[in-house]
Length: 343
Image (cartoon, rainbow, N blue to C red; front, side):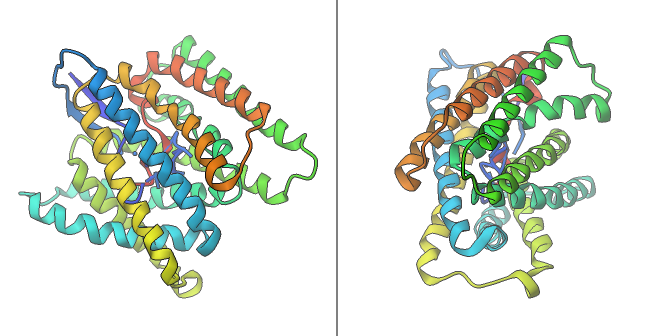
């Protein structure tokens, strides 16, 4: 039996995408949304799924910490430069590892998929990073969770898959959650205009990441996770690098440790989630994805003193409920957070 891993986190440095992505952005990530890649792996039957569930939860926490780190980095050097330098560092890290461990060159089909998906992830992650810098962490992550719901309809449109009534109902519940968050923001006195731009960016990232999920299903059949991580970051770096003469800036010396931390968190989170999805069925692991919202609340308060409104809480619960319902009908599309794209 096979199941796709959500990691390959835009939204995490070596892969990204949430509705992250990175986390998200992924993306769910995912809010990236830079940072988890869909991977098809063989299930190794274990006596109990508990170890895999715990490991997956730890991976989600690390990717959530990456989101918080990205937010701090974006405030200093901007979304474009944060993503550009992260991709460069991730490529330099993953490249030698892939070259040393890989025994074959990627096929022509794999190279085409790497190129197309890398370009898409560039915009997924850029939009996710932009949104992270302008919204409370929990709000951005909650909105990024709609990506799998959008993917249900894209799968029907592009792959001619049938959408069940249950999936349609789940999507409506999730979209209601998005509206609750949006109207809750509009109802606040003195909200910054940038907040609306941030919400639009996260939602746009989620829509693009939904298309990314469709490509990830094809990519996972022709390439291994490490290859995907390396080429995705390589293509993202090349794509963004085209604008570097006009938009690029150097990284301040005091920000390099944070940038390195983002890369390390993404790699560690990617590895742990890949390990977990290779050893337990998706039905046990999917619910752990939504612990990212809890971590976002905690990390947002600890590092940015961000409070969570009732509208964000209510909207997030509706979105999560919709995703969990949809995951029973389409687990292959409901399992990946937006952060996966950001790796």
